[in-house]
Image 1 (tube, rainbow, N blue to C red):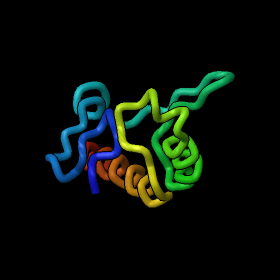
Image 2 (cartoon, one colour):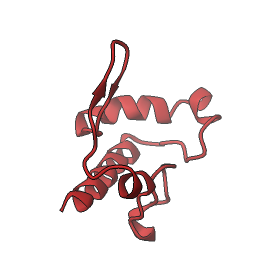
Image 3 (tube, rainbow, N blue to C red):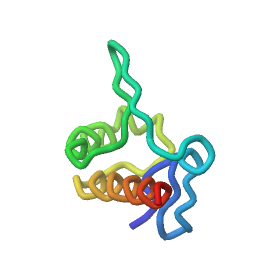
Length: 88
């Protein structure tokens, strides 16, 4: 699989996570009236796929379009693995 996300490098290229290594040790949960910023959960896969497979959205992204739901599931697993690795 190619690298399919922008803020995180592919696991195959060294698991270097810029945000996770430099900003925080544990992913924070931040909430406002209109937004929830939290760690990805596998239950987010369908919503992530809907966003990352949308041509109108992806023309503004510097990542690959998700062709299947498995791209989104793999992204979530990779991000979770990076965060779990950091917390150890």
